[in-house]
Length: 99
Image (cartoon, rainbow, N blue to C red):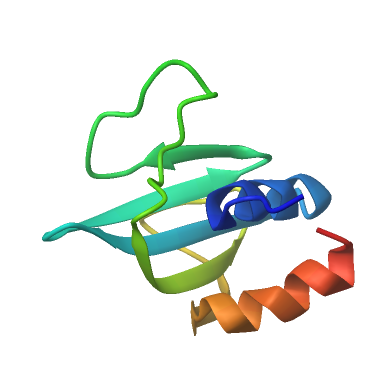
């Protein structure tokens, strides 16, 4: 089964519920930041659909960076675990947790 990177990131946060992922993506000519926590994604810069089956991160989005933070996420005082991860670096973490 070939799942999208967005779905794999959501699965990762289900396996690691003490983490929040902040994913910076380019969608066309626009930059967006998506928070992923406990299997759910939400855009921090644009409206997010109420239906969780509608992906927040389109298939053609280009991931610029992934930050791992301690949950709960506090935008005024974020606690980073790692910053600026690539999709390739996340592959190792996916393997560690079985995603």
